[in-house]
Length: 391
Ligand SMILES: [Zn+2]
Ligand SMILES: [Zn+2]
Image (cartoon, rainbow, N blue to C red; front, side, top):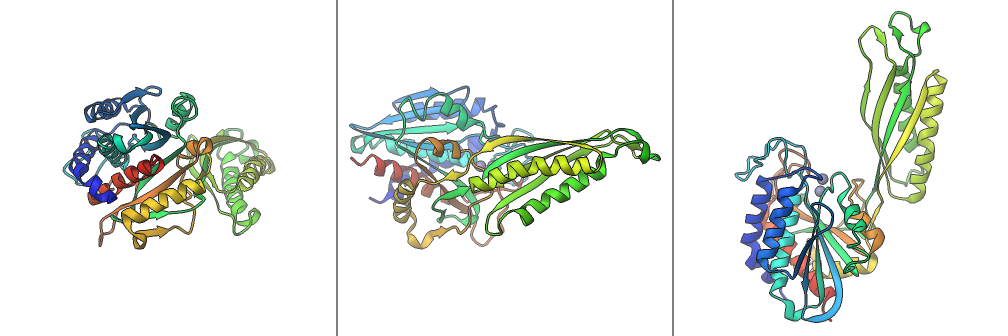
């Protein structure tokens, strides 16, 4: 079956839907108009059932003519607090908000797949379940869908797939990785408390600013000196706030950061080491150091059998020569990982870069996508669904 040929008739719709969604981006957890638009298109296409899972997550079902398994396909829906500078004619009309992570394209491609699959019920042995998920960027949407029972109780899928656009790879290609594909991403909040006083008399105060500087330096040494060189991890301090005036010794310093790991043992080690280093380094300088670890996403672990199935579809759609095998797990987090904790799943990266151009990265105000890639994305969704529901 020529999957690209199957997808071709919806290519214009996908671009049009994407342009609408790109013009009207909404932030994580506020996808009201986005959900309404996705629902409207799903009803027009003629899927068998549309329902909400929580406030704005949209679930849709296409039931095949024959009994069989349920396959899950997922697209995320939220945009970012970025002011668009891409120069595209369908640029954001919502100031300060932009689809800079390509989730507009994810939704449009999944809607395209739904439109194709609606015409193929007679060939489907099973059900295709569509997950339009909010709040990926703040790691909230997948959890809401799981809490609503849509992954394990109501029409539970036997496996799930998702894709993410990738501007670093040219349109017409796909990047894959067996096993771990995105890191576990967790946050931390650090408070270093001293005692406020006059900047001219440090002896009468406890200064948390040099203590904070020492804490930051010590944290950097955890990855380089405590972990095995072959183990990947990132400890980043992203914000630091403290102080009142140039001649006042500050009462406290607050910092936030992110911890990225792949192996569970490395994560465990860092979760033990970070509070120890913060507490004892601060104490050595007469301050009090406290850390709160904010649990984020687990590692996105591609299930081997689901991966192989998806890879076989990718070979049909792209040709073996256009599949890139990624050497390393991304240290970025992806909340698709919550689904793969519950059901076998896999996630791939769809090339959307313009050939011969320097492509702006994801989350950049200059981010753009080569829309000729979309038909490949639709073909991947359709091909995977047909493969799981082939009877
Ligand atoms: Zn994204
Ligand atoms: Zn993103």
